Amino acid sequence: MRKIRPLLPAVLALGLVPVAAPSSSAVASASDVQIPIGQYATGGPRTRTVGSAPQTITDGITYQTYTQGFRSQAPFGTAKGDHWTLALFAGSTPGERGQLTDAQSMQTQFGKDLSGLKDPTHIDEIDAPPGGTRADVTFAGQGVAWALRLGTYNTKDEADAAKKTAEADAAKKDAAAHVDYPADTLGFVHNADGTQHIDEVTGKPASWTAEVIYDAVNGAPTTGPWSIRVVTVDPAKYDLQSTFGGTISNPDKLRDMVGVTGATVAINASEGVPVGREPGVVAKDAADAGYTGDVQGVQVRNDGIFSEANNGRSALILNGRDPADPNGAITDVRIGQVSTRIKVTATDPATHQPDPRTILGVDRPAGHIVGCGYQGDGPDEYAPVMRYGDCQDKNDLTAFRSEWGPTTPTVDPKLNADAFELLLDANWVVQGIHASGDVIPPGQIVLQGLGASATWLKKYAQRGTVLSPSADITDTPTGKSITNANLGVLAGGCGPSLLDKEGVYLSMKADGILGADERGYNLPGFINNESAERHPRTMVGVTAPDPQTGKHKLMLVTVDGRDADTSIGMSILETAQLMKALGAQEALSMGCGGDTAMFINGVLYNNPMNGWGTPDQDAPYERHLPNALVALPKK
Image (cartoon, rainbow, N blue to C red; front, side, top):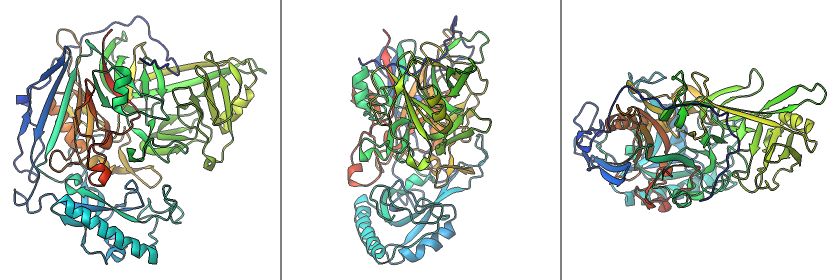
């Protein structure tokens, strides 16, 4: 098995002992589960949950499936039912979404340009969770986005044919005169100064494209269907760990990670950084939907930090110290908010005093802190967690080792910041200046600094200078260290934490799951429309402790999506309701969409789907992933 060396050792805690918790609970049996989804309309009757009997994979791992509902078609309780339609986007890739925040302005702006198309356009509203939903933001049931759709079709074949016709018509109109939409109505098409956006893939002006989708994605009441898979792991019998396969800059598929680790069970874990947020870092495959192998948030394995935290974002914590226990007892598995603090210290040759500098990033290009949630050296260097947010720091300092890849990435020239790199040996002794893009020697470290951090590196660039690293991984609310020699931490993915001990609780604000402008900066008061939409989902859930041992079990859950006949996916609120019904006491959203995948004994059990409609999306597709959660037999 290939060994992965941690970049930085965290401060180790000594003399810790496990502690038993007083309360008890069990994973719900298949016959007991009724998932509160699958309605014809709000307040109407629900479809029935059908669960399989638990299957023992090995001693310590069980597997169950649940199905619910059926395809919504008129006249089954609704006047509308669910249909195939075309989602209209601005840009040559589906990632550049044409979402507005006002339905009337959308019709006004785009009606003229689309008036010549064969089929009529319509507006679909994507609603926030209903008012009264427990969360750290206030929901009023209002629309979070209005999506422009073209036509309604009974079959996917009809929608595919309409897509070809619509795009041909749009291409003719674009060739005659491209419509210059205002930046404030469609930020993904234009730059902030109002100039026309040039597509980064084609190098051409942004143009209309369409994606075939099934309108159950909008989150409105529906009868389904849904397909759910649940693996329950006993951490007393299996080691739960994070892994990232090959290298961070050249990620593997989940099946490759399973092959390397020998995992009995594996699921996708955290979310990758979108392409374009870190210049020079690309997706391994165009079908990976534009996500790289760089984790958006924290990744810790055996107390080694492989990716810094978006400080305060929720994460799955394995074998961490319990901040609520006065003796610092180790908890086998829990969900909490995590922060990292990493420093490197030199001795100033003039004053002979310590001269510390904060390392803000681990194995990522300097300058772009995707997901934000960081604290720099200055009193004003702070940004809250923002999923996809691109917080730029012209004084950034990052560290690389060979797990990143063969060479260091180049610095984004648009930052217009002085850049400098130092090569260190495994003991943090300076070996000399390192050129950007040069090889990272095995077992050595490269520090990449911008602005004030570049100046700091230059000051200590003399060969033989000894630097001292320090790092800590902490529970954000209390500031207490959770480090332990076997600590593992994995950041959540496309959604927030879902449950607390009182029931459904969505940490939308704390986890940065909010609406964003064209730069990726969150808009206060708005949630991310992807949270309200239905997509494939992956979740983890922690059971209440066993009354005799005080130990928990971990549920690994996938919900397939983007398939009108077998499983349409779930919204964030629906996943929270699911995890509660399954018997979880705490739960966390992991990666979603085309990332969602589950392997058991080397076999792919679910049906990963990149999208609803394009030819390469019609069959299951396995993405290259930033990392995974794996269960390994204890040695």
